Image 1 (cartoon, protein in one colour):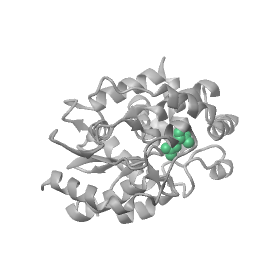
Image 2 (cartoon, helix red, strand yellow):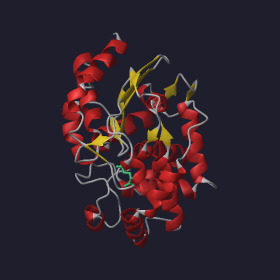
Image 3 (cartoon, protein in one colour):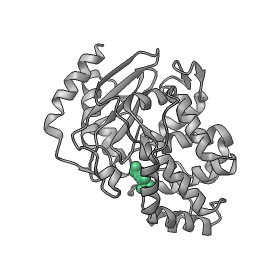
Image 4 (cartoon, protein in one colour):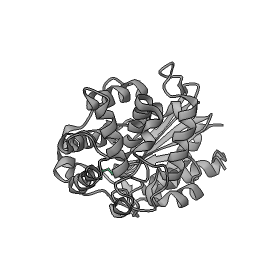
Length: 304
Ligand code: GLN
């Protein structure tokens, strides 16, 4: 398959899709990003890369960090993780509190904010410096020793993280959170601020496409069993309350973030990432979703 030509076709076809979504504006660092950015990167399991557009420009990975934090915690604590967080879609916005009250502080899944705050708390309990451990894991799997937190973004996130503080306090009142809330939300905001590009993200997701083995790291980053499980949680929970329509349109395990990035996995073939900052009403990249839909339509690489 001529992936480079396919990426070029997609980029051209996306022109009419701009202007239909809205860039995240809850902090200036996100609001100021140019809405017309578009990048895509493909990382085949043998290590071959393809890219187009702004694939080398860094952006804030935001909730895509939840995917990598989950991996790190599964590596550290194994199945224990599922005693504190579920694996069911929430059918609610990523920062919703509604279910949490009914379900006594037990978050539906690790890809909504409440669930990700729990996984970050678990890493803190198992690590002397959870933020550094997360950063080092991202550097390892992206094969890029320069990826880092964007401290301006992290500071703005922290200054506006009222709902995330509320979620954490509520869960702590139910005994779900072990660590001090201030330190916990500080690390959560740092992981969301991680600055990476499409090439970094496709590379970092490669193990999920290849039974846990990354040809770039030349190492088994994840067990085959955890890959099966994480891909399942991505498919069912990775795009918040639009997982159904996302599976219908794209048909791949996926994780998105409000920075406009999306990573998707074609099992046994590739990891693919796309970035375009305008979001749909669920917080997923508007153009990015359309681009991935076109990709699986042309290549017939949906898992279905
Ligand atoms: N930093 C954002 C938050 O915690 C991340 C949300 C997202 O990307 N969906 O609200």
